[in-house]
Length: 120
Image 1: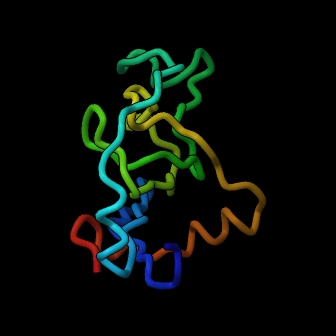
Image 2: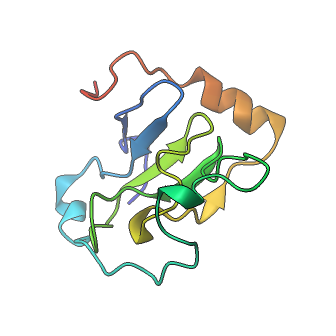
């Protein structure tokens, strides 16, 4: 499934980069949306930062890309900057992983974001 043909798309400076659509369209049909996991984080805008002001969806955090309840499929996002707008306040955007190490963060900083919402 994953190969060099899985494009980075919708890469927005200091926000997110979305990826996961297979280069071979026949693979995508097997990955329709599935149910959200139970949200283990408090929901809503009042919970997007902690008591110290730390944003909950920090640079390097990863989550499914979704646009509503039960909308997750084979697309993912990685945060290119600290972000409270995503904040993990919805079941489809709860962080499930993060990049680690200085080299990984340097790579995130090199992702081209000039196309923005429109993708290449």
